[in-house]
Length: 138
Image: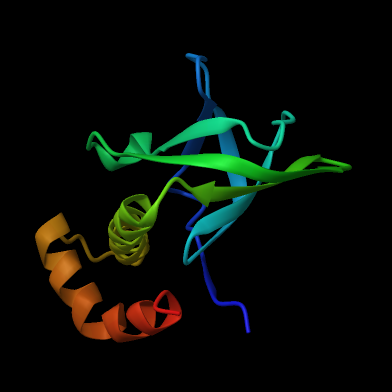
């Protein structure tokens, strides 16, 4: 059975091909153990090395991977990306956890409850870390 986490849409992922300075914002992302699937406005050839970055996290954070599949859809391209190696896969889990915590913090803010990032992280870990860990530990 495939296991994945839906990446929060309000925490954009930019996917930049190697050698380019411009990235495309990915949408409809699912992140699993070893890679991710997303939609992009432009085609990327299989085998192309890419960098994934998360500009809204206010941290310098990026992941390395390569395109394994790219299919045309009516609204762009469905792209599957495999993380470069086990270290990048591990790092992706940490980055995605930060993204999920930021999503939680923003959701609470919309509900009128403002939390700093550290408090939101403690609450999220208490509530969701077991499920998150189980989902990405296959």
